[in-house]
Image (cartoon, rainbow, N blue to C red; front, side):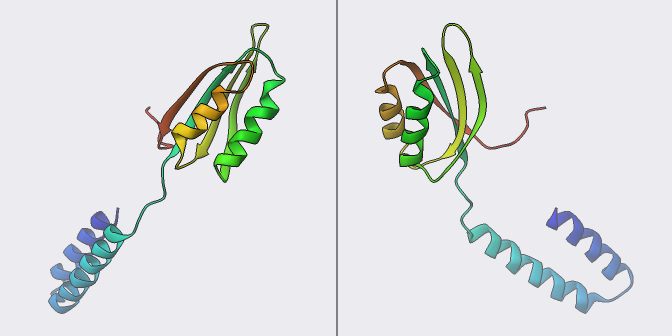
Length: 122
């Protein structure tokens, strides 16, 4: 977006003959883009998908998630006669350990961890 607006700005400035301003803004925008490129981005979030045989396991699962990551949010909770399906959005650097700990909870049958960049496919 920055590049698009900068190019429109440069076209207008050069069209009016203010070449010095065009050169100065080009240098400033180039430096800004380089600085933004060097800045670290936040880690992408993950979706933890848990299948369990009962709703009583939810409290245990949430306590384990809190132990392994600071941020989490339950995106979906589906309860049926067969058990509980839950999707939790989280950020963690210890995904493998989290999955192992959740899988050890009695009643948990399946655990999946999927990278999620919060962008829509549509």
